[in-house]
Amino acid sequence: MTLLLDARLHPSLNPVWWRIPLWAVLTAFTVSQASGVGDRVAAGVLMGTSAAVLQLLSFVHGRAAQVSIVVCIVTGLAAVLFAPNGIAELPVVVATSRAPVHVDGRVLRGFTVLVTIAFAAVLAIALHSFSALLTGTAIPFFVQRAIDHQELIRERDRAQALLAEVQRGRESEAQAAALQERGRIAREMHDVLAHSLAGLSVQLQAIRAVAARENAGPAVVEPLDRAAALARDGLAEARAAVSTLRDPIGLGLDELPALIDRHPGRATLDADGEAGQVTPEAGHAVYRAVQESLTNAARYAPGSPIDIGVHWGADELVVTVRDGGPGPGREAVAGQGTGLGLAGMDERVREVGGRVESGPDPDGPGWRVEVHVPVGVGAAR
Image 1: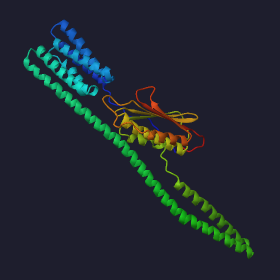
Image 2: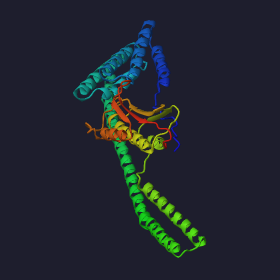
Image 3: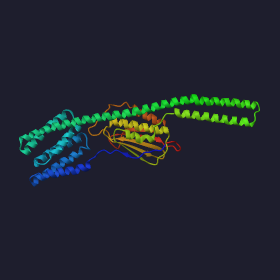
Image 4: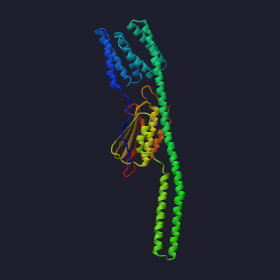
């Protein structure tokens, strides 16, 4: 086979390149709405700090994210007091809508109440209007919408994990059906063709013996010898064809790009080194290892891009599958695994003389699976 492993990238949307100038324009507009030099400086610093901290929420998690949300809200509300006619409340609303990703339960309810009161009070003071207190009702609305969005993301993650499982099941079912059909054809060939050729060979040998006993000339004996040789060769070829049909069908390295294209999440395939040769069994073991790794990533690392690296060395092929762990606000869609998938992967790879290394990624927050299989000169790819 010819290995077709072009680098394929499905990049995640990372709009930092336009968010920075956008928030710079919004900050400048807020500064322009302040009345004095001192107010403009204060509004610029506070609004700029709020907008900058807001961008950090895409890169931090846990306690750091919670602190960033609080800082963003406090500085944004303070900027509103210095520039009431600006839009410093915008980062406050955005940060509040991000809170359900990093805070939940009773803490989220208390947080929503406090922000609602603070938001309404600051706008009422800044605008000198009691009617501005009603604007605080927008905060629970945004929080609830964010909660609904998080639930929608969880359902999508469950659907993607289920889709990965279904695709693997369908592929296994199709392969089993193909194996069953190949077995049926092999039996038919063995019963009809092989038995017929074997009978023909026996008959030719008997005729050759009779011809020799009757002292038949070369004109009779030589065609009989050639016919017997053809029958023996045909019998050997028939048995080889039957044996080939009974061999399991192996999806190999050539099918990796299609496997990755079918994955419901984002994935990158990259190959380097001079392509060598591996046995069909080794290629099939690698394929199954990558398939199992992609399925596990869909379960336990929803929202994370997956990197598949194929490195050809002089003596071995190394295939690495990495994920980055669950994305922000995402969680695994399955409980504690049984470990049977990794055990089966390890057993399959060891049968072809390779090994599997799996565990937390030392270079990142996610999981890494590394498959090593030998490269042999003269082996079929």
